[in-house]
Length: 278
Image (cartoon, rainbow, N blue to C red; front, side, top):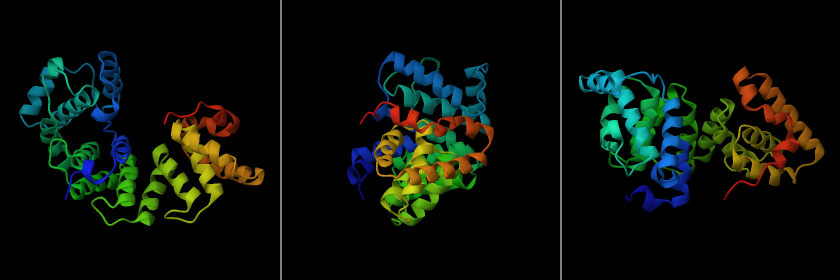
């Protein structure tokens, strides 16, 4: 077997890294400003992290086997490596993916779905551990079984390409649907593509329009680009039906989702947005 870079194209590696939230070296600009901005953004997203916490205290507790502190420290290492992989991290020292893996593993084994997701991503890429798609799928499924929606789309991608599992586009579509219904825009984008082309599920231009429009409203640039092309193939009646379907879907969502997809109701606005970068 060969590593992921040898068995699939670089574009697919980048796609899956984005799905996993592990953009890392390939996608993050290497500058001090970008590093600082990335660090602040990712730190705000770290589950349960208290900015007032003293790093030294977290490190002390982690070294003494406190699983919660190990998760926090391992996550901090991951963030530092994602944002600026080539430089010293000040108070963090010089973390490695091996260090992050060792710190996150106890939390993953203890049922932390965030840690399970990150461990799965590390196995998929082969950072800190020897790459292993089967182990990647094992941990991603653990995370998904607890309802972590980002894992749904990642698992769907692995079924599409037969990584760690037998290639199965029907099963991929099932995972994408779960992600899409949970308001995950990458899942909506992929499901829209599948409906548009009839891959894995029945071709349905109306459903494709609905999912692409929702993903575009959720801020996905590739969905906006696809929607503009797809919209030209649709009749006014089909577009109206897709809008009714999307509105019905939104009415069943919570206030957070309604706010996230507020632009769904303004198709002209979505179609006017700038072209997504290739």
